[in-house]
Length: 291
Ligand SMILES: Nc1ncnc2c1ncn2[C@@H]1O[C@H](COP(=O)(O)OP(=O)(O)O)[C@@H](O)[C@H]1O
Ligand SMILES: [Mg+2]
Image 1 (cartoon, rainbow, N blue to C red):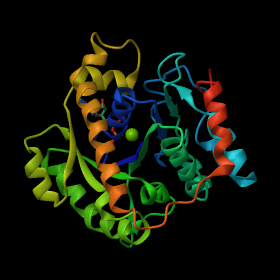
Image 2 (image 1 turned 180 degrees about the vertical axis):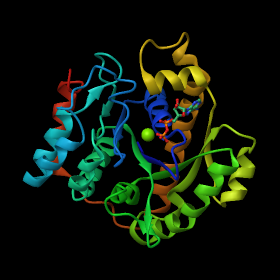
Image 3 (image 1 turned 30 degrees about the vertical axis):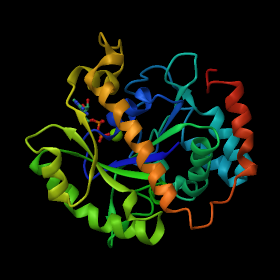
Image 4 (image 1 turned 135 degrees about the vertical axis):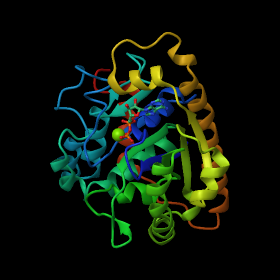
């Protein structure tokens, strides 16, 4: 299964899209909320459920001890998104942007853990990377989780179909392509996720930004408001336009990632991660923090 990283030039629906994709996937799924500016799911969809004792921040200390400790901490800081079944999980994000600096050396090892979850444990993995900041044409080392973007199978820039959104995203595309070529798995990982708000259609967005639109999600106020603020799900939530399109999008990302892997075959396979296998056992036995 792929690791799909979603980011934006300016707040436009990254977290909502990441949640919709995680909840809609046909496979077991996992969302890592890695926005260095702070997570919003804890005080949003999961309002009142998750204490500050859970989440991404706690992985920084574990990583300093070792890979196995990080893997164990990761497994115990996941929170179920689907009651007790444990097929959909979230790693809640930072409670304070000041915590982001502590994470900068954690990202590469966390990326390994997420890839093990995708490749060995069969999860559809989504990363909310938040709003991207550039410094001298490169991803900012502390204001972005750059290593997560470098290693993702699919990197999505979320945009709305508005002039403002396209204008801001335009500046990201070229540096990001170069960055993925130089430090990542290649510029062909990059694509757009259109949030259908505004007058511009897919082909216009693709042309304006010179990048393919890999999926589009409809404007769906009821569903998005629930995913943003929590409370009681709206009637017909699972069949809502946002969730239905999100499910189709997850299939598309899976197919894109599979095609990329075939093209990359001549290169040596990535190292296996025997030291991380402990997380697989833990996850098989419990559905996350409450499991
Ligand atoms: N597909 C959508 N339809 C309707 N509203 C949306 C949609 N996606 C996002 N929104 C709304 O836009 C606002 C910002 O969304 P959010 O996901 O928090 O953005 P980001 O993570 O990029 O900052 C929220 O109020 C959310 O409910
Ligand atoms: Mg967000």
